[in-house]
Image 1: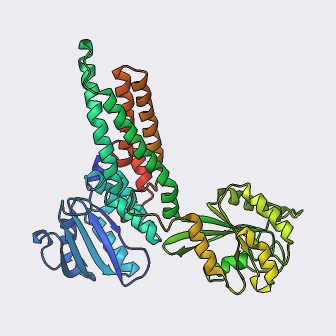
Image 2: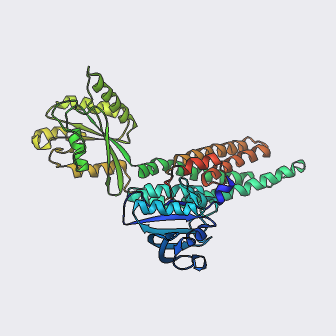
Image 3: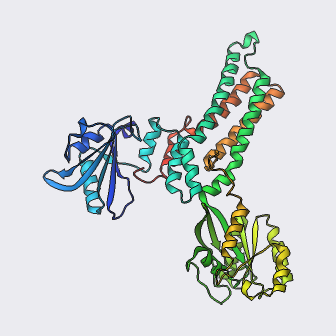
Length: 455
């Protein structure tokens, strides 16, 4: 394992496929020497960091490509090691030939996330910042991008650092008490410790509570489009996406399984799920589709319940709405075929606060999008605030909170210093798991295996 950490690694840093330019990245003590051995241009080992040099890459006497070589001399690099980035033409043949050449000269192929792993191991960033790098790459909306960028720059880490520093101070005072236990002295004021724990608990509660919104901003809002068969759910999905994503048919029960796609509305990603129509049926396949619809509805953050007022009587619609309310999930009642409704019919539905649309013509779809934003209430969120978006982080915060509650119990009852010290150490341990101050090889392997090769 130690040898792997000191090897010089190489990988393609840009997406696989033909393109104008590809970037091959090397990191390690021998990165500059390896590239220099096949580079026909300036002597790279004598050049300054953060400089770019034009030349050719040659395998013996065979020229492979004209390239630009960017130098980042340790510790002034992403990984804190010598890093070289070779910009080549995007030919698959050229890329493979140059990477094979670097491997022949002493590099080895990088594993998934290994460049960022080295940045973490070499102190360039903590673990939560490293995970934010992956989130930044995967971000597909303005909100998810901003949150990932804020975390990568250390916003979340700095807040955790302050929590740890305050806890460490009291932990050291209590540990000191244990050293003088026979003299029965108290170095850590219990009232001050209690006030601190109460303050920290409030911060932890805020961070844990932010996960629901942070996770939604990161991964998108799951929205189920539900309703009886043939009310226009697939047509509505196509109208929202502005493309023919779902098959539309006048035959009831056409959608047998869920269809998912996503759009971005004012910086917020919505993941729409078109489902099978809800009805009693003897068709085994359709019945499975209905069962999946009900399961998806329970998992949704928001439900669009679509009604065809031409097909269903008003009294029947009110029964359907009552059933949706029992799920205790936010929903938007959408009345389709507004172009076929009389003024009297529209007035009948007004007390239910619906959105009137025509899925076929697209009329009212923009109003529906506005209502979706209001329902999830994400436009007013300040994405510059520290927000938790990672399930691993929120679980560690919850464990930290549990340990601090034990400390409070110990102060009030009271419990001896050795038990207080143990609970504080446990809280520090869980906080340290987030930033990587406490980590295992298995944890690191699990986190960085989710990265793309070359990052």
